[in-house]
Amino acid sequence: MSNLHKPAATEAKLHEVIANRWSPRSFDSSHTLHDSEINSLLEAARWSPSSMNAQPWRFLVGLRNDKNFAGLVSTLMENNLEWAPKTSAIILVAATAKEVSMIETYDVGLAVGALTTQAQAMGLHTHQMGGFSKSKVKQIFSLPPDTEPIVLIGVGKIGQPTELSPTLMEREVAPRVRKPLTELMLKGL
Image (cartoon, helix red, strand yellow):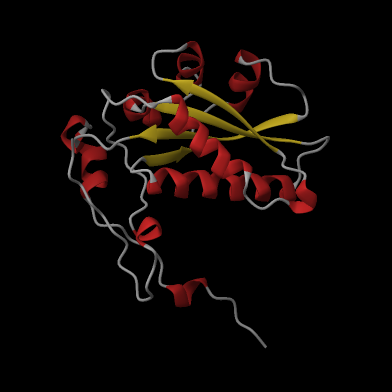
């Protein structure tokens, strides 16, 4: 098990769950998730804020070595294929509506934020992936026409960064960097 710890360097005090959240690519391929852990992650997402309480999020869980996991892995793009198959689970998060708009996507993002924070509080790490074929996901899992894949989330325990390619290992052990808060602020009146 890796002891890689990369807390955020912040000017303001943050809760440790938020400060310690980051998206590793080195996952422990021997770690397995229990149903109760998956249920906790999904419950956290279920109780996230939702416009008009529409709850447009939908989930499909693949646990390593099951058919859903294999199906989700088959949709991954090249860079994610190196590390994502070592995660304990991959969760497809989709939005559903007659026409998925920005508000449904926003609500799904809130649900993913809750799931990610819950995972961190449970000693797990997540890595969100946009690098997958949405059309392949729709085809493999026969998603209804009103269901739009948004993101895949790898979940598990951190593994050894030395098991990654040199390029990904360099990124894995590099310090975390964020834009300064002043750069993120819009100018007011």
